[in-house]
Amino acid sequence: MRYLATFLPLAVLLTACSSAPKPVLSEPHGNPFRGGNASASGSFLRQSPQYQADRLNGDFAGNQAASSFIDNMVREHGFNRQQLYGVLGQTKNLDWVLRLMDRQAPSTQQPIGPNGAWLRYRNNFITPENVQKGVAFWDQYQDALQRAQQVYGVPPEIIVGIIGVETRWGRIMGKTRIIDALATLAFNYPRRAAYFSGELETFLLMAREENDDPLLLRGSFAGAMGYGQFMPSAFKSYAVDFDHDGHINLWDPEDAIGSVAHYFQQHGWLSGGTVAVEANGQPTEDMATGFKTRYSVASLRAAGLTPDIRLDSDQQVSLLRFDIGSRYQYWFGLPNFYAITRYNHSNHYAMAVWELGKAVEHARTGTQ
Image (cartoon, rainbow, N blue to C red; front, side, top):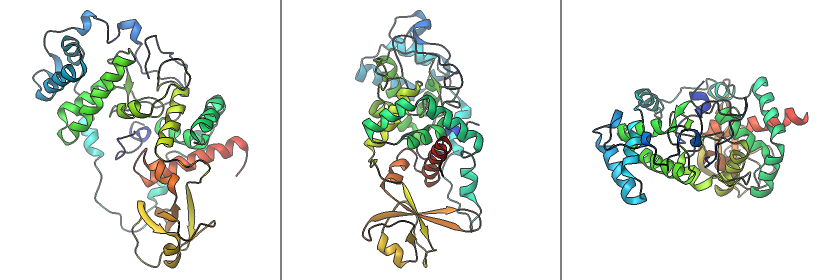
């Protein structure tokens, strides 16, 4: 997630914290992979012998990037050096994370002609079974979803769609220790070392602030956390204590719902607006497509595309193209479509979120 948007949703790739023990919620909406709680094993702030060392041992011993990181955390944030030695000495380098990250690098190969790519992507999420699980999640957390709409202006179907695409409503939140993933990428992945070093820094600050054990929290192979798969930097900027218990816990559905809604509000979600409008026709010329494009409705009409519903001629929209096998389907992307791409920079992702949310809403209300 968030700030890791060049990668596919983690739910596809992988087929917050308090001084008191966090609730270990029952399946299917809990996280069975957390491995315990802070108070059971000694929190990061306590001078526990298991988190004290005179030097950095383990997988990152002798790693210059790790040594520089520790120096920075001591100098800039007042961390105890011996504690950092102890914690990072128990942190593991995960070679498989490096291999997986390399496989997620964007491909420059362009398909020739329509081949159904959008339909294959869509079918990962919008299935009868998955939609019914979304209905169950919506029913269980209806009050929190309605309150999120009242506070942040983001409708339930968008929040439900995001959490469904990211983690199947909490069923696939990742089994990897977050500190292992982030340290591996910060210290042994030069291509994005600066980014992941910043995420590791923020993660440890979060653990200290929330009095959580950094060796226990688990998430995605890239360090994303909880129901909404927030990276630590997104936690810092957008996570909220939506259940008002004094702590932010992204593994708690209510805090996750509020945090996702807050994220969208801060990224320009327009309350009451739709996401995209299907276009009739085919363009008469080769035109750039994607959420970054900008055209007036009038110019697209002149090129052979008209919206399904009335839009002002001078309204600026993006031109979206989806491969449905037999042909390309075109849509006019509105500001709320762009807002969804702030969560993950992908046309497919944004459309899947919207369509999954709508499918859950329709199944729940019996409407089409």
